[in-house]
Length: 155
Image 1: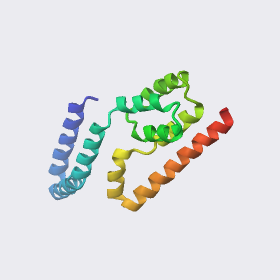
Image 2: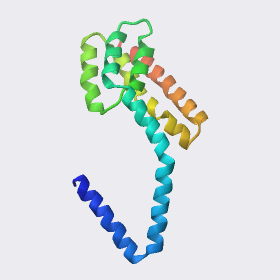
Image 3: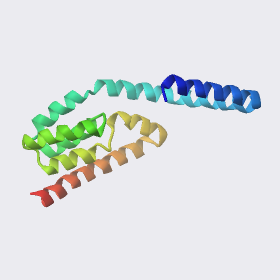
Image 4: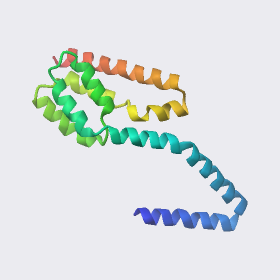
């Protein structure tokens, strides 16, 4: 379904809803307006952070990180910063594997993708800053665990 078809369908649905029950429809529209008003600031902040972090920077960081002393931490950070579809990441990781990255590096990177740094302000807004910090820290620690576990099993 094309976008304009979807939006047309939504518009027609609201018109039919208004014809059937104007008070419920207006109440729903007021609720929608309040929801959009609540989300606009976090959405703008998230958008700015996403624009600031480009995938190419993450890829260059990964290539330099393969032989670094703190390579596990660098791969975890790159995983946290990585954006986009996982389908793009697999060929990148395969090329890094060919360049010397270990399965432990790949495991840490993939696990760390669960953290999305640009979305942390949104998580803090909905849950709390404390929750966002603890959740991110736990995922970071488990990324390290994934690194060392893969190092044991694939060395």
